[in-house]
Length: 130
Image 1 (cartoon, one colour):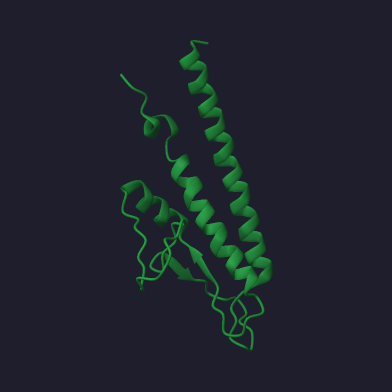
Image 2 (cartoon, rainbow, N blue to C red; image 1 turned 45 degrees about the vertical axis):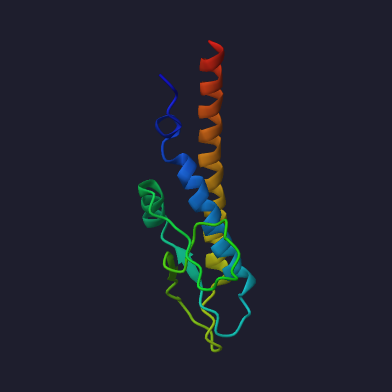
């Protein structure tokens, strides 16, 4: 009987992938904090993880010249953030909130990574018969 990595690792492998995509979206928001008219976006983590677990995520391109994207976030999975205080130029990025969300996402990523690392160490020890 072989090892089922899906059963051994749980949802943490998929969670890492979704967290990476969310980090890209949040970093993009921060990079465009001074861009007039830019609308801050975010990923619904629970919905994305659910889609990832169901194997429903596919990247769509709108032009045949587009390069394949390594991230999981497609235009359909991104949601506009509701601004607490939009600026006069139409930009909805709240730098403090984006920084806090980015930091929380990094901490959640590290927690999932550490959990996976522990699981791999346990599997490795089991394979060696320890």
